[in-house]
Length: 128
Image (cartoon, helix red, strand yellow):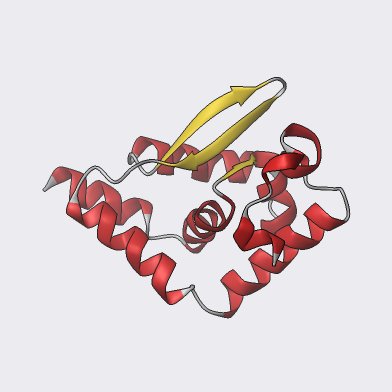
């Protein structure tokens, strides 16, 4: 039960839901790209990522100067159901705008993840 409560507490914020949706769409992205899309300062994005990481929803890895974040494989049925719901519903207008902003950043070369770190790995969902 404690893990379920921790998951729902982590999901109780719009910014964290937006971050999860970005990770669903892009697979793996850096904080600077999240800043661009979300319009939030690095400290705020990092704080939200820490909450998601502590809840076991995201993981990180270092790539040179950057820290890249990705979704964690679901550890339980609640976690799996939440990710499934976010994937299937698409999240509405705000999530669609976030996806467009990330795609624009990629196309304009501002996106660090796909412009600098791993340009050969632009997700198919973002290339449309």
